[in-house]
Image (tube, rainbow, N blue to C red; front, side, top):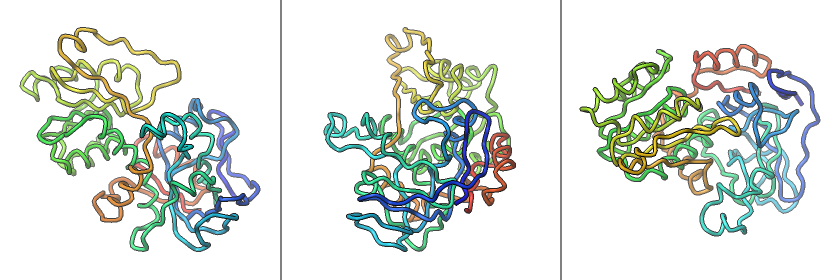
Length: 338
């Protein structure tokens, strides 16, 4: 089969690789649509602490089951999407409701969907392989992973109704935050970004937009009557932006460090903001199977305007232009149609 393989940072090639076969409890899916993602772009640029090279790229997908391993409770021809990792269900984190933090979950992951076929591990088949309604387009169903991740992030910050939220970044994850914050009754959503085309997508969803960069804290104070934002969501993955996030929060506000930083990155934060101003700094990683099911439900009911998120399509052999367009911010996400 054909697959997009990353041999190391900066080196992506389209090549023939062996077609996967399902083991016990596993299935093999014929990919119908698979999306670009910031995680894949970061992996291409600098690697990823949980992924070794060479690797077939991609993890956001929808497709039809082609082959079924012994004991898997699915049938060939069923249309599916899935979570990305398979938690064990038995460790302390899993028992206490944090399967997203299971230490072995990434040992059982769906990776390599930028290909014609992908194998789904048994753990995921058992707990995180989801049937897709016939009415939901494949490129929309493939958004399950980012929607579930944003739902997890919002679960970490409490009720957003009536609050002023500042989203740092204007990419697809930031746009999902804008969409869900608006639908959950946030009093005001302000988005700071650098790409005018992407900021326009946020404005279409009801957000106020400002240019990121020098003087952002003064502009945020001006927009909020000098108070700062009740909720600040860091969605850029930029260490300097993350470090400056607490300065943008109101007293008693919350900062959500959503985007991952480079391995070993450290942040210097003014202690008085945390102590005297009671600014809470929260983190969010991955998502749970329950949040994945909630994401698929939202997508199936048409509550996510997927046309603003998946803004292009391409065959696998168009990958070079696709990666260039997404990196430049000309597209939010592009669906490869293998």
